[in-house]
Image (cartoon, rainbow, N blue to C red; front, side, top):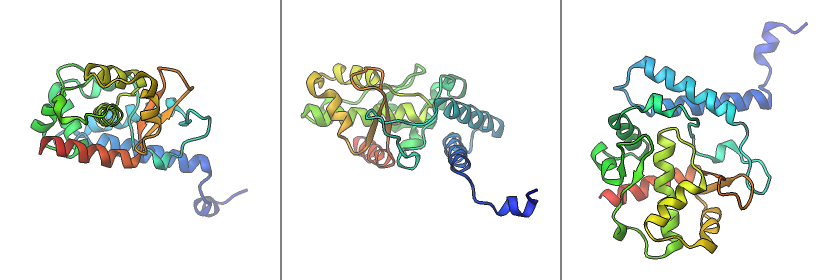
Length: 214
């Protein structure tokens, strides 16, 4: 029989380490709500985010290999984000906190009246090159949706790229897949592949957003 002391000193298994990482990511995501949010609301957000992350399972690249959790940005998943960010003000606070900008500046970059944020950057602020503009738009779409606990598929990005007339169909997927700031998950050639920010992508998104509102 294993004593309590032996159990306490035993190293965590891979599963235990992964669970600890998920709990940490969920808590960090819930903490982005800010100090003005009631503790019970933050606790509810933490629970919903953790449950969604557990349902989501392991991240797998489009080439079939497993993606390291440590290389991805902490990202809340799930369809219950509306329960947490139910007003434009809450959405503004979450996005501005995530991008480290002021609330009014977040409203310069995104339309927040609906549950899903809309990119509303002036076209002349994007790169004239379609490939680079695609990656810039991806950073904006992903950062806003990540801040609000929304998953992002390639189609979400494609629609915005089309609106800005930067869509280059033969090279669209490649522009995302070759970006060092992004990881594309799921089956190749599927429009429903999930796109996530890497840790470096969060930094790039913040730098880009701060440059746009400077």
